[in-house]
Image (tube, rainbow over all chains, first blue to last red; front, side, top):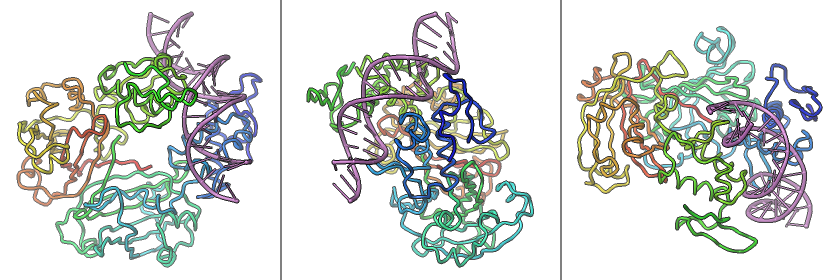
Length: 265
Length: 265
DNA sequence: CAGTGGTCTAGACCACTGG
DNA sequence: CAGTGGTCTAGACCACTGC
């Protein structure tokens, strides 16, 4: 349990009490940012598990020796980043991919007709799941060295019986040691939920690069399409805490009956 | 100038003083939400023009007879929605598309190599700009009736001399009365900036539907591409205040040297 | 320097949840 | 009912901007 002391920037005593704070942290920042960082550490270290409640604001305020308002502002930011979820009257909970509501948080493909909602779990077919060595591009995306052990998965998702998504995934070998096709097949839920519960890896944000492409022969066969069927190419890098990349995913989306939905603010 | 009174929910007096509030507003909401709505009205009505400062928090607090903290929370939300921009020591400013920094706020296409930044203003070529009547799909997108007057624009954007984007736009005829190809050509800046300064229409958010398509012959010619060049089809509906749709835009993006960048949270 | 937004506190009360 | 997050206030002080 880290610093229970008014932390940095203590103007009255002049004490620069940075015990418990990770080295390399910029030495000057608002109190609530420091509190946020401390809470982040606890989330990251697994002190509070996904879908469980974190201590109440009052509790955290006394633990960190700050006012409730300061804790509140820290949690506000964490909630805005979808790392925790507030529920009035109940508490603040560690966000998870394991609940129906946040299940397909990163999937932007929705059916052409029905707005606002996905059409439930897709039919998944694992085509391949093997340990290999990271090629240069994969290594760069995952902040590994070329040749490092990675897990590679290929699968097809079908909606209403129609193969719609072909995905290749690369996962760093270390954190995902022990992942097999069987475990992927047996798990009833989203892949990111499995990553959470089985490997303790929480995907927190992601970035996608989207292009339009044509399929190669192998892809054509897997998606049951012709040579000139245009496809959405979606390359995603998903990150855990601390902007650590934990997954590279290359998806091909068939957009005859679906589209990629994006909100711009 | 609307209600200068503690507004609704006044528990002490029991007075439901809703003078000045628009009808149809749900009768019960936090004070700061009501303040936010009032500020929104002033933004919308043009009381404060884009890129100018709105009154200080203290000023608004006395105007609305609430504490500064309450005004602050209202403005916080407006800032989070990119409707205003806070600048410490200077004030809070009405957001605009007219500044370099926020120029291409809605354009997600970035060059393959250089991350984080667009490559400066594209070369624009207006192909067509005419008044027509809204087809059914256009009317639906813009909340008009089929046959209503709309302005239709077609243009090509080129990066480094290469035609990369072909766009068709539809604008409601009323608000954009007087828009011509010449005015579009003569204006030095983003299209949304022109909409702001010349027509008083501020685009506040947008939604995009993305698919992969092949070009038709006309599109092929305009983009100098072959029959089987896959393209990103980006259909955007842009909204002003109050979720009022003000533009339908259908873009075709060439993604050989560029990609559509999206951040998922 | 005065004026602005940004942080922090302490305390009151409200709204919602669950036992 | 007690406990939680949500709202609101009043006041102090800090950090930044521009004159």
